Length: 103
Picture (cartoon, rainbow, N blue to C red):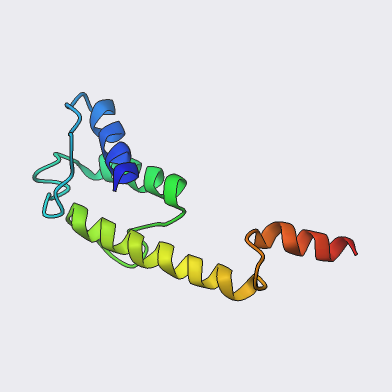
């Protein structure tokens, strides 16, 4: 949640708003954070860059908690997908498969 807080605070700072010490799950993106559509686009890009997840890909989100939930779901799913292609005991699938291609 700290990385999400950094993303939100960067957008708020760029907008000239004070940064926040914490992000309650029920905090609304538009009403409580004061984000407009451009701010939400910036937030989406920052979250995608930080986590590799487009939280708006499957529809709208309205609260910090909804973003956190989608991040948790998608990051967990990515970890499961990586572990299924990575042989047991190998922690870096990319390096493993690069070595395999060289031999």
